[in-house]
Length: 209
Image 1 (cartoon, one colour):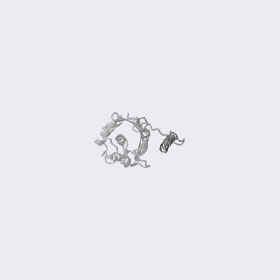
Image 2 (cartoon, rainbow, N blue to C red; image 1 turned 60 degrees about the vertical axis):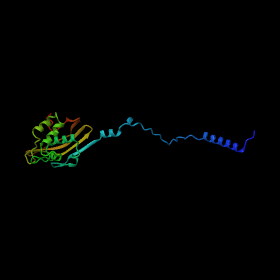
Image 3 (cartoon, rainbow, N blue to C red; image 1 turned 180 degrees about the vertical axis):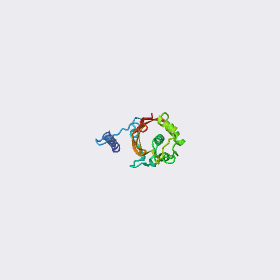
Image 4 (cartoon, helix red, strand yellow; image 1 turned 90 degrees about the vertical axis):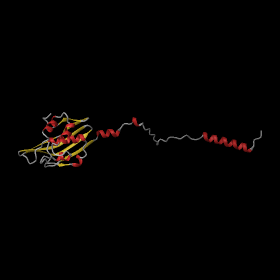
């Protein structure tokens, strides 16, 4: 049988090509390579959300001072969410903040107008529906004696710390009565439940429950 050179060349080329394809090395995964399998979005732990829930937010409403009254911090007051604004409105009735001529520094900084305004009453009533101290303050129009009187009180410091639904109130309230000076200090603690705030512990006005 006679084989022509052209046909022989084609056969050799075909055999060489098949042999090369069969001998190709398969890719080898090096030990230094890392395979990362990302779980579906729904299976991932919301780490960021957990961190946010455990984070403590601090609001310095009145900064500490050796002499009363302390300094009103309008920057932090402006950042207060509504429930904490209602809590601040409550404290502006529990103690004084440079009160003169029917106005108190904290109430004014909260944008609630004069002491005992209808706006202040409605805000506190909304969030403290069953709180005895809040109801008493509303009935007496959040009245605070002026600093020029023989009996008055003044916050030297007032801070809120919120972690989740729990709010801790740290403060120093100076009380003055006919030349005698005393102090009431926190912490007090509250919990936000839906659209209401409940008292867990309170040193100020502690006998009113």
